[in-house]
Image (cartoon, rainbow over all chains, first blue to last red; front, side):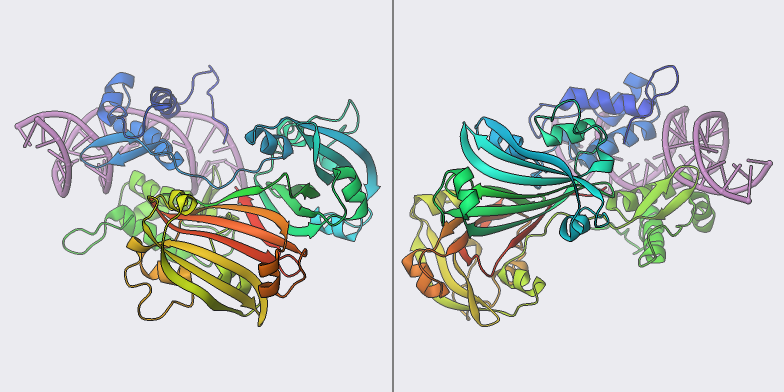
Length: 239
Length: 239
DNA sequence: TAGTGGTCTAGACCACGAA
DNA sequence: TCGTGGTCTAGACCACTAA
């Protein structure tokens, strides 16, 4: 998806036109006009097919909408399915300040369940990272994450990242797809102690298998205090 | 998105090419070759830009994948985010036989919460439908659905539909987008009795606001037995 | 070297919408 | 009537891949 630049540093013409139009219309109200194709032909001195290629990309992207006989307009933003976000982003969305306390971080040999989930072999090295995660300084969630050590060289050196997803992002391993499962349960003894709730209090169990390309980058199990956390999911995609 | 046919009944050229290629490659293994662009130019006697327009559509659709210098190939099917499914589909996916017992169905005046969720005014008529939903003949979930009466003329006549989503589908109101929220709790007395669990047992509370186009078609609150139900969600979209 | 997709040109005619 | 997007032509050169 990277944009190709020719050797002298100038972008391809259709890219130039596309980014010009994007910068013109981003932020404009839905329904407001974009430049007409022939206007862009004159402005850039390119062929109309080149302009159409640029506009096509923005239409596919959902930024523009064409109406035959009328013109090209800023499209109503499409409602998108939930993005894949980690704990910090989830808390930020709720206006809460997230922080985490690492309870355990070490290299382990993958057991059968973790190995299968990470698409590794039993006994392969995995990073096991257990954190008590707080929101506004009060316990919210206990998370056990398992990571493929091979994909994360130097992960345990140089200090743990504040945010796993930011670190994955920096490595180009931001998950693009995830399978989550969610169930309700009651807190066991250890969990109750760490989360500071009564044994038998309602908790939400959340498992995730996060994938980037063809590689499984994270497998995790979390247990959330049900009195503090509701999961939000958006499904489908609006036209 | 309907295909345009000219008056003599022949499709546009790029549509002809596109559908020819589609019929050639659908069902073929990912990675197998599609015809080259120049081959299609000769076969159909059209310009290359026309062929590219046809192929572009199939690439955007996710059916084909272009590899510069190599050719055009059948793409690996993209993993899609979770579809919006109702109880019957969810149970079928788990290999369970769903059935439902209507506990209550009537027209009510919308209270403030339901009115806001359905984008109606307080006091507008809504259909309230409460069902005990079973899987393999054993209680799974208690669901209260609220529907916009105006969108569903004759809904209460002629027998209730077995599946709400099938009925919406038949009316062209299949939800295309939904906001769900999920939380954990423990069963109250009435719920426990209907679901045949102990008071205080873990339950999963699920709320949905389902939208078709610009109309809210369904608002519901469900409570699932946590010992029988785990929610599955797929997020993002694989490249 | 031959074939592929990626980019680009300089025109053309059409159907449709608005004035 | 005029401007819009939709379709289409018949070429061209490029970078890349594979043989």
